[in-house]
Length: 273
Image 1 (spheres, rainbow, N blue to C red):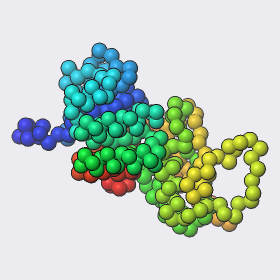
Image 2: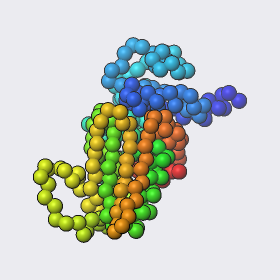
Image 3: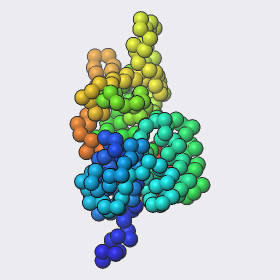
Image 4: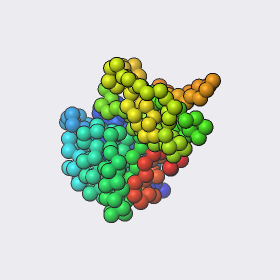
């Protein structure tokens, strides 16, 4: 029975394993009986074992890797979860696909053209993968509620708030929210008065459907977003707050498992719920 269970385990590697999100992913993979921790990649890799660093029940001989390509070639994981940074995520993703590994990408900053390239590469290899702007179930619901509300409000703005170590702005969640809202309403703020910014950028960035997106970066925040919709005499605010990175982990585990049954790229957790 034990060998049958082991045979069904999904071999999972984590790229960016020493980062704040990566650490939680490593622990989640190590504790899930359906998953097998196959490798951990981080630029600050050392000779310390993964088991000792994280205090998890991984193989004692499992060491950190500096090179994603070396780890992929040696361990041949089924899935690799990436929480790195926008500068390297596309190259990482393409390396995973080239190695026959299914990518689950939590790093934001990929362009529309890069997403198309990833999808084509996955299909050419008959593999599946996911790019997920936000793994929290509550955040996915916030986006869907905003999409529904956008049918009835034609004025809306988005405020996203993250910790001051987040490299990209606006967040992938904010962009994804605006894209979903655009499916319900082609353009927002049509009746706004002509504006003059005394300080450039004071009104935020104009995102999809002319929705203004405002990015806040301060220590103390993790990941938060407000969608504010207005019409004469009323305001509707839809807000989600991530108070602990543990809230993302059920979504990560689900994405890893679902990726095994996909062909091509899925963008957004809502498509596999």
